[in-house]
Structure formats: C-alpha cells, structure tokens
Length: 108
Length: 108
DNA sequence: AATATTAATCGTAATATTGCAATATTAAAA
DNA sequence: TTTTAATATTGCAATATTACGATTAATATT
Image (cartoon, rainbow over all chains, first blue to last red; front, side, top):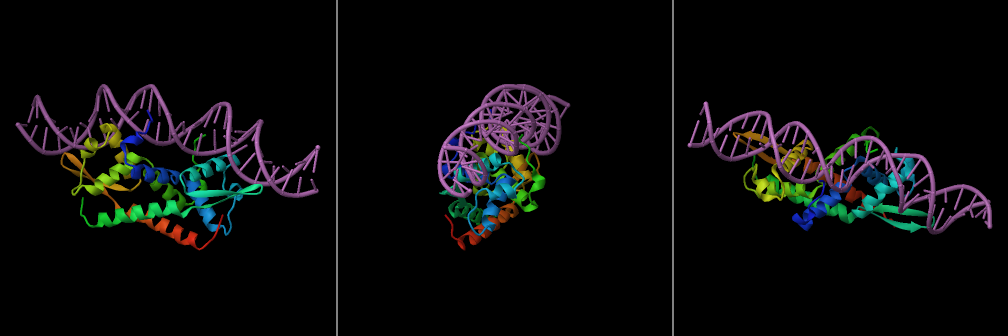
C-alpha cells in the first residue's frame, strides 16, 4: 500500500523520521556539507558542485527546507540557503540520549 | 529515473545517508525506541506493540539490520534483536560536528 | 524594453518503498 | 513425530521518490 500510518506513532517518532528521511539521500547530505563548507550562503553553486540537474537540486533543497534542515531567504535575484541548526540539534540530542540509554544495558 | 548516483558522492556521505534513511520511517524509529525501552532483548513482541503485520515488522527489522542500527542473534526458536550503538555514535558525532561548524558562521 | 540569470514548477518515466496475505523455514514442545 | 511458535520470504498492489527536460516566474543587466 505504501501508506504510512503516521497516526499510530508518536509526534516525536514522526519528527525524528521526517528529519532523518530528509538526510536519507547522499545528494542531500552533500548539499548540507556544501552549505557547511561555503563561507557564505549559496544558491545555484550547488548545481555546479553536484552531478545533478537544476530541477533535481531545487527539489532536494525543497525537501531539506520542509524538514527544517535549511532555511532560505530571497537575496535579489537569487535565494540564499543556509543550515538551520535547530533540526540538527534535535537529532544530536536524540541520538545522544539513545546512546546513554543503551550503554546501561547488556544484550545479545 | 529514481537511480541514485551513489558513485558521485563520498563514502561518508553515503554512509550517513544509509543510516539516516533507515531511521526515516516512524515505524523504524518506534522499533528502536521499543528495543531501548525493553529490559531484555526482544523479538516478536514488536509485532504486538506496533500496528503492523508480522511480515512488515520483519522487513523493517531487516532494513535496520542492514543499516547497522541493530543486530540480531538467534536464541533458540526466536531471534534476539538489539541496538548496535556504533551506528548511533556515527550519527551523533557527525551532527555534533555540523553544529560546531555552523555556529561559527553567520548567514541569512 | 529586451535579454540574461536564477530558481521554482510541471509533466513524466524509472525505480524504490511500504504493507500485507500466503507460504516457507526453523526450532522448540508435546 | 506431529504440533506449535517465531521469523523470514515471496508475490503483489498502492504509493512515493528520484531525476530531468521543458516551461514559467521573477529579478538584474544591458
């Protein structure tokens, strides 16, 4: 069916899944790393950097933005995209908590 | 096309994407949390816990295992699944580094 | 105003994911 | 050895994702 029964899961579970899903493609990870590397916010340089066509990059940017991983502001002709730390903080703390919980226990 | 040009991205980018993708579904996040909550390693209790049929849970477990997020060991009749911290550590450190890098800069 | 630049959107093809019923497999229990 | 329990696998339908060419919309430049 392919339908994801989001209702059956907690808000937190859905939040984590949405953010993680956005990072679940190497092109989007590459975009994040490029935004990180560039001193200033970029726009279409990503197209030159990645082996992907402009509409594809635009689509990936949209998904990253929807998931809250980046934000974009209009800068004249172009659009300035940059990383939004908040989402990354959510992930980092979520995983940190998991690791703390796991190491308390023994298994397998 | 749907083809992911994994070759064009770095090993690290692909590694992060694979792990993140595995967590990109609320059911798999819920499975992780359930494994975390349970004092002992579990097997098919997950099927009773989640609103998903047994083959579906089995498939999700397989994907989590392929991504290195959990490991399973045969325990007689059943299979004992549990969290593999290593993958979570990879993610945590990756995001921690991103956050450190971001806060140094100003943008948008 | 005409043209170039930047980026979003539309349409569409190829492929992947999700979910489950049915079935197979494996090992314990009776 | 038959039965039971726990999982995995297969096959398939519904849907989502990925990618890109063509087009559009909006601002800059000339």
